[in-house]
Structures are given as C-alpha cells and as structure tokens.
Amino acid sequence: MTTSDYSPFAHLTTPNATLYRQVMRAFLAAKERFAVHLRPEDVYAALDAGSRPVDLEAVTQALDKLVEWGNLRADPDHARVTAVEDFYRRRFIYQLTRAGEAAEAALGTYDEVLGRRGELQAVALHDIVTQLRALLVISMEDEPDPAKTYVALSVLTARFTDLADNARAFMGSLQRTIDLHDIEVEAFLAYKDRLIQYLERFIQDLITLGGRIALLIGELEEQERVGPMLRLAAAREAADAAPEEAERAEGVAYERWAARWSGLAEWFVSGEGRESQARLLRGRALGSIPQLLAVVRQLNERRAGRSDRSADFRTLARWFAQAPDDAARHRLWRVAFGLHSSRHLTVDADTLAERTATPEPAATPWSEARPLRISPQLRRTGSYERRGKPRKVADRGEAKRRLAEIAARQTEETRRARDRLVTGGPVRLSRLGELDPLAFQLFLRLLGDALATWRPGTTTTAATSGDGSMEIRLTALDDGSTAEVHTPDGVFSGPDHLIDIVDLTVGHGHAAVSASASVPFPAPRRDTAPQLAEDR
Image 1: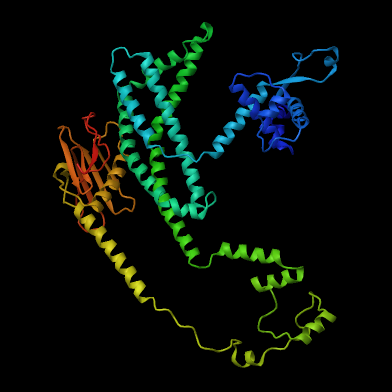
Image 2 (image 1 turned 90 degrees about the vertical axis):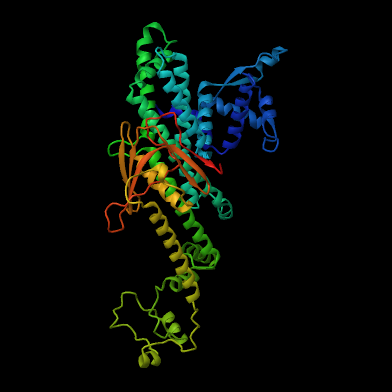
C-alpha cells in the first residue's frame, strides 16, 4: 500500500480532529437508522450541543475536508432546487464511503481494545466443558449430525477465544495495576482484597475445570473422533461456496478448524517440553498475589512516612523548577548530590569575595592553586562534628518477639499439616479421613501439580511441589469406587485413587499421604464428576 491509501485516517492528526471525529460518528449513527445521505444542517443538528461549532459554515468546511480525504462522498443536492439560480448555488448531500466506513470500524476496534481491562472468565470454562461433552455425545452417533456438530464447534471456539483474549487483557491490566501505572492509590487499596479473592476463585476453577477439559480433549483425540467432526464442520461452512470453489473452500475451512482445535488443545494440555497456557496462566495468577501484597506493603510504608526514592526525586525536581535562577539551581545541585568543594575546608566571606574578584581557572593544578584554610578542630581531632547528646535508641525487642512468635506458629502449623498428610505408603482416598483446612489446601496444591502432568492413557503420574519439599504419586483405580473426604468447609467426592506423597525433607525415603481435591481424577468412570459441596 502507498501512503495515499491511508488518507481516510488523516483527520486524526489535524487541529480539528475532535470535530472530524464527531462528524464521522454522526454519519455512523445515521447509518444505524438506515439513513444514507445527510445534509450539512442534519450533521450540525446531530452534533453534541456543548461542543458543536457556533455556525454551520465550520461543519460544511469539515465535511469538505473529509470528502477530500476520502471519508465522505459529496453529491449535488437537487432535491431542494426550486429556481434556475439554485443550480448555481453550492448545495451538496454527503454519505460515507467504503474507505471512511472502514476507517471508523478500525478506530472503533482500537478504542474497544484500548479500553478493555479483560476478565478471568470462570463461566467460559464451564461452557467449554459443556460443549466438549456435547461433542463427545455427537461423535458417538453412527452418523453425526453436521448441523449439531457445526454449532457445538462454533460455540466452543467462540467461548475459548473469549476466554483466551480476556485472560491476556486481564493479566496485562493486572500488571499495570501492580505497577501502579493505571490506577489511583486509593482505588487500589479499596479493591485489592476483592481482586485477590477473585484471583483465588478463578485459580480454583482453572485447576478443577482445566483438568476436566484436558481429559475430554484427550478422550476425543484418543478415539480419533476429532478429524471427522472437523470435516463435517468444514463441509457445512463451505456449502454455500460456488461449485468451482467448493473443494478449495472446504479445504481452507478444514485447515481453519484444525488450527482452532490445535489452539484449544495446546491451551489446556501440556506437551513434550511445553507447558499448557492454562498452567502458565495459573502460575502467573498465583505469582500476582504476592506482588499485589508487596505493593500494599510499599504503599503502607509510604503512608507511614518512610523514605521513598521516587518521591524524593519528584520533590527535588519541584525544587529545581521553583528555583529563581541558575545560581540557586547550582547551589541546590551541590547540596543534593555533594558535587562541591571538600566539606572539611572552611571558606569564609573574605575568601568568596577574593575568588569572585580573581577567579581560579578550573585547569589550575592543586600544587599551584591558592591554599584554603582548614579548621583547627579537624586538624586536631580528625572530625568536624559538633558533639551533643545522642538520640535515644528505640527498643524494638517486643515487636521482634511478636514477629518471632507469629513465624514460629506458622511454621508449626505448616509442619502439622505436612505430618497429617504423611501416612507411610500408598493409600486409597476413601481411607483418608477428615482434613483440616490447612492440610487440605496443601494437598490441593500437590494434587494440582500431579494432574497437570497427566496425559491421555496415563494410569500413574508423579510430581514435585513447587518448593521441592514433597512428592506426590497418583495412580488410577479400575474398580469404579468413589471416595469422599470431609473438611470443615464441606465434603469433597470423586473417583477413588491411590495416592502416595513423600516428604522429601525427612530422612526416611517413603512416607505417603492421601487426600482429595476439588479437581477431576482421570479414572475410567468419565460420567462421575468430582465435586466439593459446601456444608452438605
């Protein structure tokens, strides 16, 4: 493309860009009402009363410029000609051109993407599970219905696209929030608790539903049902193509559907040497929580009056801006950064007057320069500080003792939770018993790490915790039994498994733990969905 091809965007960089944008929005609003042509007075009336020009001539000039750039087309207005003299008057009606309409569509997309903050859509995860189950049912038919297959795949890809796009937008806006570039401090402190709860809730749903989605994708691919369904969808999509283009259109549609399915599978299923996008999103969301807490700590320190380097530099910049002249700025520079003569040298008024009268060249060697008088106190004691009563040292022993008690209590709680999970060998989930909240949360994290490594056809897997202190081994059972784990928050149920967790921090080599988590287990009973019921 040449530069002239982008002339419909020229109105964005002119002094009257705001008026041009309002005029183009008036034409878009008229298009929504199926109005094709507008006269200058129609455009003038459609402009906002608080920002429209004082006279119609300014709007007419703006319309002419937009015609010149290719955004609008002007046609002679013969409808209001009532006399021969009217033919010689300049009367036009205006309408959008294809280039102008395309430019406004591009600007609308730009404004939408720029203003999007994104969201983590747990509902989209549920919808993806529903559509994958529908595809599994459709694929089991002897002759799958093309219409049902196309609709299920279309809804699945649409929900997945929304989930991926919004997740990227949300994590980008979250990073700007953490950096305090896109939010006021008061607003951040007001909603940080809700944000952390929102992240924790989505992470739990991502662990639960992400594993279930990976299992459904694996089952469809293992039974080789994906390819035929994609071909059915491609054939239906290309059904309206011209006869000579039908075969090529179907091939293009199939490649497009295959790429969509591949993107869905890679988003939820990890591959050889590659982590899934869902797992990366989970790690990024988990890592953002301590970053948010660190920002809160920094804000609290700033409010408590602790020194902040960026605030100091901003204050210093204001001082420089408020200095009356260059001499004052030089003095401020020397005071702030210490780039001045030696502090232990005494320079009195006479010396300053002498230097002003006969300045010393900067290239003068030290040995040839005029000497300066040194304080006798400095020569005698080696220090120029004035002695006085030292400030009292604050006793922080009580605060340190409380912090030590809190740290010891948290360490002891974590140790008890780890000891609760260690049982000495592989055991069934149904034999676990009741778990306290801390032990249950610890096991949820371990189980999430194990299921992230699960692949279609796998019967046993092992994973190590993030801190390398514990190892979990998960083995599927083929007897179809169900396990229930009781916690103070509710009852967790799911297919029974053998679980063996080794505490790597102790001397013995094989201590085991069994528990259950609100995540799907890859057992033969695909119709049994694990669930966590609250206060059942």
